[in-house]
Length: 439
Image 1 (cartoon, helix red, strand yellow):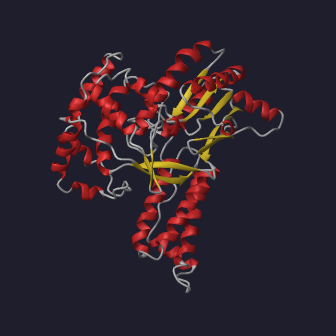
Image 2 (spheres, one colour):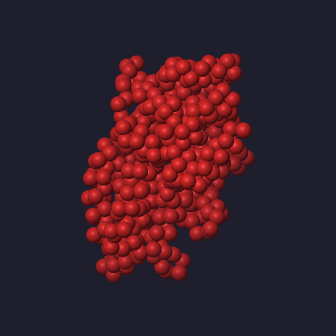
Image 3 (cartoon, helix red, strand yellow):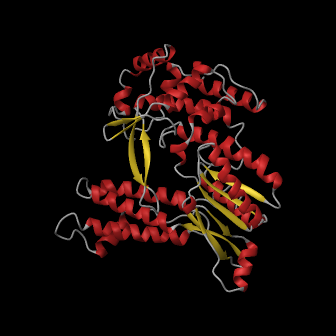
């Protein structure tokens, strides 16, 4: 029943892209929230209340009825998120993540469903992040197409400085009112935005930003950038361009492919002004114009110079010769991401090696390898998948033998163990050269 009503909303939103929805909050009822509860992952971290998903599920019906009642009386108050930090790839800086209460996660799932079904009708094709039936691999494929089959000569690589922390609540609410005028739903979203953060036992109010890591944050970020960036690029930037231009965006990671260097420079200048209007700014150290495309490759070949490369979505994109000698775009795991993934594996092995037996954590190691191949297994990246596979095997052998002062197994025994209990082998999971995308 919930999905049927959401589908009806999606149809209405698509039929009339200017329609403003007046009554939505009734969808956040006990029955629908129970369906959302089932989607919660049991192994995720808890909020500051330390209530697990399983614990919240006890007396679920009574809990959800009480929750809906508090919302109707406007007494529902989302709790502050617990802020934790994870290291940023290729940087000494850390990224702050907000972990909500279990109860608030349930409400956020429902909010996410409502917003997605409304705004999918508005979102443009150049946006790939955190959207149904879209992925980072499709963004890489779009980049491949723009470079190989369009007139791309320059790539504008853009990094928005602390994007999630700097989203302006005033502007976000204006973006939401473009399609939603249900005051109760808008009130609920505003409550989440103003819930605050707990860090090291201290409360911090949130006057701007939406916590990265929150379930509803990605769709709110997409709504914000849809109006701030995507529409502006399509309606203001492209019509004035001298040649081909295309924006490729995955959440707040974005590239612009340009035919003209003048277009690339002018875009970067106007982008700085545009973002500034909405409380955002460019990270200058991570933003640049790269000469990248067939003309640049041919010029570098004539001058016997190395062609430029750039990173996007964890891949390094570079020029490489095809089997017939043509220069094409190649994609490989970036050195930064390879080093980070191996460090994560090493820290994990260090943590679990003396806690559980080998046969139990071996299954988890298999899952980690499969996850890596599923993401980085794109056409042309087999060599770097193999490097990762070999490095993980060496790390695993080393940490098995650190379980005690006595050596647990020699290399021959380890090889035999991997033959009897094989680890997943490198695999290309996504083809950039087929219509379907899956090889």
